[in-house]
Amino acid sequence: MANISYLSLSGKTQGLISAGCSTLDSVGNKAQPEHKAQIMVYALMHSISRSQNVNHHELIITKPVDKSSPLLAKALSDNEKMAICEFILYRTSKAGIYQPYYKINLSKARISSIDFVTPHAVLEKELEPQERIAFIYEDISWEHTLAGTNAMSKWQDRVQ
Image (cartoon, helix red, strand yellow):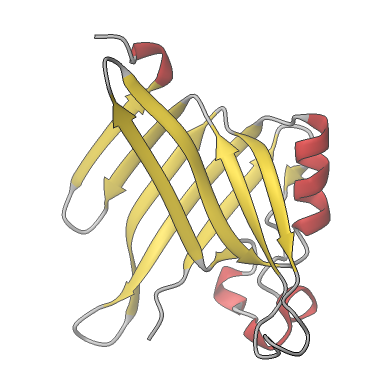
């Protein structure tokens, strides 16, 4: 079973951008009523590196085209700062229950790029339109909610 993640996203201007994103009207037969105010995340990629100082790279997600798509484009166009940008990763427990286990929070996040991808209608007919959204941020925190560990990295504290 695939381990889908979810994003709760609220802009300082637009409010709850992720409202209604996992509903039937938004994503069709992939609707997840228990996550209706969250954006479905198919893939998440992020890296930090260090040469002399820590380098925070973009956090990039792949998501279906949904209700949030026009709002994300507006947030990028207006350089809107996000009030909430929380990713929750899920996995299947040994009891077979789908459970949240890991959180990533970005503070002072903004959208830096959007790639809108519609698959080739003949060669990739089983695929659906998707977007890759890249976020830049000032601070990031990670929490393994089941194992009880957490950490954070602040952009302003990068020189040591």
